[in-house]
Length: 408
Image 1 (tube, one colour):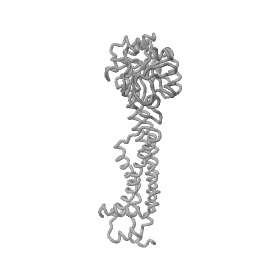
Image 2: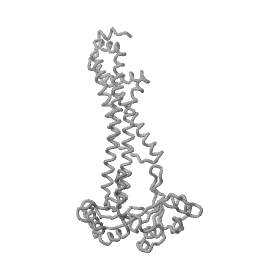
Image 3: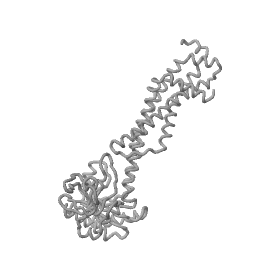
Image 4: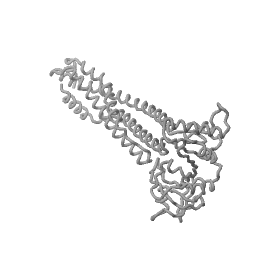
């Protein structure tokens, strides 16, 4: 029997029992849809986080009171006991790190911004040295960045996010307008390019002011983070990290062999942690989806066994007319594989649609990796073939004489 004829017979059988086919497909659909949804969201999250990590450049090293990534509350409480990274530490690194291309420092808080009759209460206030816009790859859409002189003299100037200009400053040129940040007046000199939203929260609701101005308003004793451009990856990163560690340990008079009381991180630190988390998450979801596919395969096998029993007389007639065992085997295998493959197609469409719906609803990033679609369809088809072998073999082994005696 030709493959095309077997495929046509399989489709006719499935169409003749539409409700049973739909219910049979549910296990495969759920399994494939869950895998596609998670893979799409995970891939989107990986790309987004990697992009945000690389916002500071692949050659940027950070020095902070605690690691930029930690998992447990106990770790957080332990890191909180460390001494703060201070402005004096920043000045010491600025003067002492000979291999550093550029050095910057940052402090952040949430504050109130007022312009005329409009105000916000949840704006991210960033205290930046004049080198930070370049270190963070901030693109200025209008105006300019800070100057070194403005940083040194605590000039009251500000770079604002797109939300501030769009929702508060109104029409017209925003440059030169006066805003009040927690009661202190600043002149807008620049506007950052729009960055969009993440999980429903805007990434453009921020104001950046010189770090010295920030310290005058909010005090100079709170912890800050130091950013260093190593000028390259690999050996350059290692060399700069070693210099920074020596400088910080010397400043804190740490004895040889004692642990660091500060954290030095690179983009690789974030990417490694992200990779571990996403791999674990993916393995858990893949296991759950695998169970769903196995259940779907068992359902397919049971339905195919029922189908063999119901179509015993049909099998007998076909054998009496010259159909070989291989023809019967091929027909039922194609039928089970087609059923599973159809479930895979529906699952892929449903999974992508669900992921994109989540993106639209809560702005969670999603990106469909093209490799996952053929893999999902291949796995779904393989499940159908694997669990269809036994029913197909049973149908092929039926004695035509016994099959013809079966009641209609």
